[in-house]
Image (cartoon, rainbow, N blue to C red; front, side, top):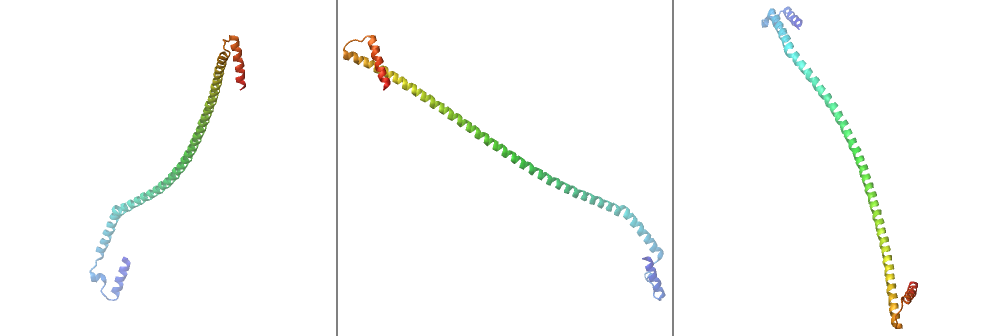
Length: 183
C-alpha cells in the first residue's frame, strides 16, 4: 500500500501539482514511526487479546462439539434403554399371562377335584341312606312279623279258648312267619 501511495505522490509531483504529502504536511519519518507503533500495538493485542480469545473460542467449540456428541450418544443410549424396557415389559406381560393361565387351570382342576369329591361324598351318603333305609325296612318287617305272629297266637288262644303250650306256640309262629314271608 505504501508503494502505491508513493507512486501516486511521484505522479502528482511530475504533473506539477502539489502532492498530497505537501498538501497535508506528511512527514515520512512520522509515518514510519506510526506504522511501527501500529505493528507493535497489533502484535501486543494479537498476543494478549486476540490469540487467547481465539483459543477460548476453539476450546468452547470443542466443548460444544463434545457436548453434542455426548448428547447424541445419550440419546442413542436412551433409545436403546427404551427399546430394552419395552422388551422387558412385553416379556413380563407374556410371563404374567402364562401365570394367569396356569392359575386358571389350577383353579379349574381344583374345582373339578372338589366337585368330584362332593359327588362321591353325596353318592356315599345316598348309598348309606339306602342301606340304612333297607335295614330299617327289614327291621320293621321283622318287628311287624313278630307282632303279627304274637297277635295270631293271642287270637288263636282266644278262639280256641285254651292255653297253648310252647311247642304249639312255636309251630303257629313258624307257620305265620312262613305265610308272611311269602306275602
